[in-house]
Image 1 (cartoon, helix red, strand yellow):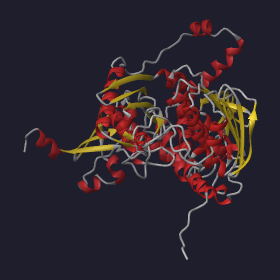
Image 2 (cartoon, helix red, strand yellow):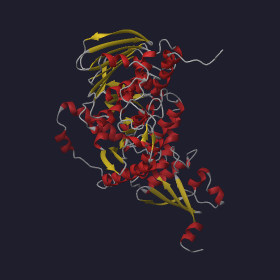
Image 3 (cartoon, one colour):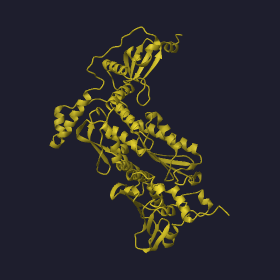
Length: 590
């Protein structure tokens, strides 16, 4: 008896669903791609309970007649491909004809569609056709999907919390909007509008909605091409950067793709302009001959195979470097000059009673910054020079007990000497290490002491982060933080912990929230290290800041008290040395 048999159509659809539909966001992606192929100019996505309970996707595309609406639920039925030649010249978002039958096999689906002449209603329940009839509906297509994975509990249990599932949907719609700025997108969750675009073709406008005014204002447009590729989009200047790589958006012929090699090309181009382990915000759109790309590599179509990939990588690197060089030429790096405003001028500017709280808050901030973190009440201990073996002098904190401060180089480095030769200290990295260890002691236990702010701190956030506010608050409560929703795209912080001083608050919270784009539950050890290192960085002496002799000696004194004084929290060295012997060789003194 034969043991090999042909699987039923329903079972093959369920298998295909496992490849195409892993979670609600997979359904949203497939449906949006169908809407784009239908030439829609307006696409509305409504999600309920993270899309687990229900999804409604509506577009104003060309719609379908009765026969096409029936065929759309047949596996491998498509209007986008006719012969094998088309497989090597794919110009549409979808092409396999698997999306609707796969979705219908694991959920309840109701489709209403109108081709401009007649309307059609088709209803499926877990693979079974329930209804197929004429109906009245506007031009376009509306898909109502509910009960996802109810009859496949093995898949249902892999779904996460509704807030997390919706955050993936929101992130996807944001990216879709960036790759199709000429389409108007509207996304809502549980009846509340979260994100929408105008569809006027402006990338800057979408970037503004996603990340706020500062990011949009610092975005530089680029557009270059060679004989095979055209690349265009936006580069955000490197002074604005992120803690993760998830802010580089790449599309190929308007199709969103993931490519480690193309991401690396972007980060390599930014390398000379950005600190280590920081990542840029980039929107990169690639246009190329469809015959040079194979999009039939992965079921969800995120990955592609490119011909002439090295040529594309070189074009990306060259274009980004040139664009950054040109955009940075007008920026002069100068020491910040403290501006003193006379009291009469202050009174002239702030005359309205409601502005008085601003003055009080500014006074509070000024007072905090006047209490420099490197000035201690205890007396400065000057190095005591003793005759010791070189090995002893250059190990552990002993190094910093036997050096003499000479001067400051470029307002950034502290030049010192010891018996061995020249010692150069990175003033910012050194203070980062000291503050990191000091703050670490403060956070050995959960923070319980906070102080209210006269003016709450506002942070512009994306819709996927906004939807996870409860998860985020649960994780950051340990540090004494709490975020509150304010409007459609703002978090506010009303209180800060007592240890949270001398910090660029908005930048700190941006970096903190970036971590929650990577995963559902952030590892607490990783989160704690990030908070400590970011806090230490933001509260430390900056580069290009002149220091007095006493302040430089205080930096050295602080390093003496560190358990690990040789590297900052990010792994960069705090100090480098050059021996007398090496100096003699360089000056050819043998």
